[in-house]
Image 1 (cartoon, rainbow, N blue to C red):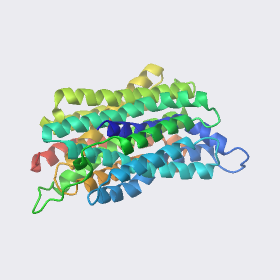
Image 2 (tube, rainbow, N blue to C red; image 1 turned 180 degrees about the vertical axis):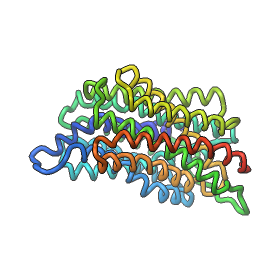
Image 3 (tube, rainbow, N blue to C red; image 1 turned 90 degrees about the vertical axis):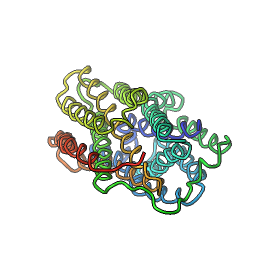
Image 4 (cartoon, one colour; image 1 turned 120 degrees about the horizontal axis):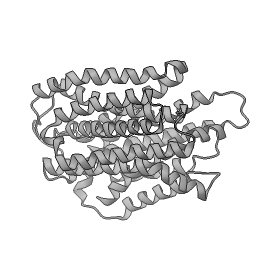
Length: 380
């Protein structure tokens, strides 16, 4: 399992590592170009990464249900390594292509790693433990990415993510040569009927996922694009992104201790929706570094927990687990695509309205969660 933990962590780290450098890379890519708007390219480059995952994650999930998917995971990590390492002093066109390839790879890595966790689990409690560890690795990558990017940039200022990409390539080699049980990589096809979730329950799970990722995307993009007054430069933004990753990691540790993911999922989801709404409201009005840090921490905690709830329960039925996890990742990317696109298309004075739309979604889901869980028979 260790190479899988490194793979999902490296995927997340590659994303947040790029975010802290995004404005600088856009400026470098526009050197010598008369056309182009910085405030448009930043959100569009933010959107193209999750767009790649959104379009291809269901395909990776569908393939994983039908073949040994170890080679798919190795290929995805290798492509992510190349796309990350080459992100530097390049043209904007090439930078868009690299981010699209990185997004396609991310869209394969996350659901495939979660599927390995499902295959390795021996029961519901064990599955909850493994999913918590996997998502903790994902969010540890979120935490470490900006810090590792700064270290990589000191070694290669012209290609700031080059050595970081080499590290991701090392993870691909580990996946290739480290031995793991064969049943981790092959989904067993079941005969006969299998318990299925109701459509309403699945929609609520997907809604939780979209809302969590959209809220986090709004916070990340606002820091990269607007640079709040409390954040003086790229280093401070990198620290805030790492703080967000630390919060996401802490959420997994608490979940592993309480077990509410299995025993009280509806209560957990409702509480986290309230926390996310408050965090977004606080972020829109924050006037100090402390207030901004609290809002970022709470948003990271909320998004991590909502993502874990969605991933765990949507994969509970025994059939087509890979496809279900792929669809869930694709749906999670909707918020990550929609928020940057709305930011790019809307006038600057309307940008805070994006956060308020997500807050309204939190309120609506707050009423839908107990209804959906109360009416759905679930197999654990």
